[in-house]
Length: 303
Image 1 (cartoon, rainbow, N blue to C red):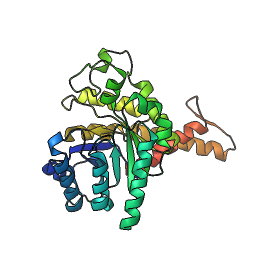
Image 2 (cartoon, helix red, strand yellow):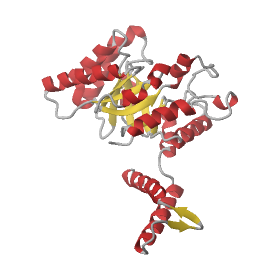
Image 3 (tube, rainbow, N blue to C red):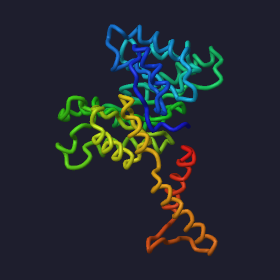
Image 4 (cartoon, rainbow, N blue to C red):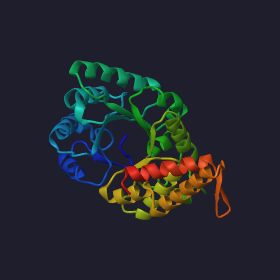
């Protein structure tokens, strides 16, 4: 699977933004039909997204589409029309407010029929946004609901509302958390989602940071999400991309540390020892696995 360090969310009804996003440094461009689209623009946005999928030269960029919730009158039409008219151009369909594995079962079976009818060579993926207490409670079942699933995404603002948490910033997306809670307020929720994702071989993606004029806050939020095992983070503005890409990429220091670990382990193996040490610190199989993962990621990103 291609890297998903940065997922740039772009309003589905604003076509000029689609063209700009195709030239951005985002790993993924997500054409959004849900929260960023006014109610009276929903149907038009669907047409615009389909046109953009078919007409823009996306080059090697991954393109996804977030549909409206399946509990709305728009969601099933979004899924049906995007898959039928532009299926080969979309890597995955992002489903918001997934509270039950039945949402994924429904989308999976609908896509099965469309792909058989259209004769698509490749299957369309699915991504589930976990943004409620019900969704988090059911996240293990959701993660295992379909082989189409590629990632689980944390929706912090709606999750906050679902549990009655305080609103401490204008956007409700990760700002000023440190002023309210001594630590990471969403450590448990995000870690539970990450665990469910990784147990099923899925990627785990963090919610966007709402203040695109606060690079320091974005840096802190990205570092924390990366530390908890997330593979990437949504972005709501192109100005956020470089910071997120940097945080979710191995640094030169990380790569050198991994090389040191792997070299030491190889020398220990040649010498017939099961473990190695560097500067008095033990290196065992778990450390080696971490180093190998980082090394392979750096190679994939051509660093």
